[in-house]
Image (cartoon, rainbow, N blue to C red):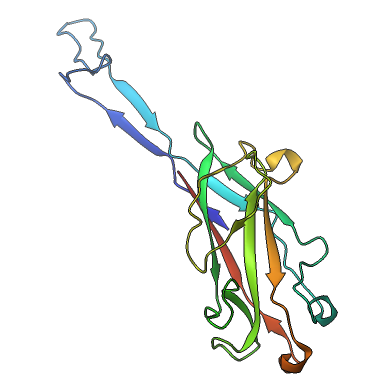
Length: 195
């Protein structure tokens, strides 16, 4: 997913503008030649780009009977951000209704064709920006921006690596209340905005 601001190009011409050293000026009146000047200014807005996200496929054995963080569950991706500090904010948005049955597990995998709260397998998301000094993951709120500002890479490809991670954690599933057989899924959008 990409969130881009286009560069804004504008020409500024003025006969007398206070506090601008490069104000446009008219040429002199002459029969042979006349030279005028103008200033050109380019404003470039911050840009961000998310890349390297992969679909996650899990099997039932991975979530039965325990609070489970799947093996290799720190899913890595790249966040590119321009600007002096490369700062950005991030939000994970689920296509499924919020789970209200399990505090701390606001996201849900819904059975194909069933889109209602409590009709699936609940899970939580956590996010970590590997460019900060902390190793702590931040809890992702349901369909709301995380309250922190993170550091992006100044390379569109993160220099061939990744600089961000998310983690999926499933709630303890009691064998007696396992959902019916079927495929359960969610679509999560990742929105990154420059700061």
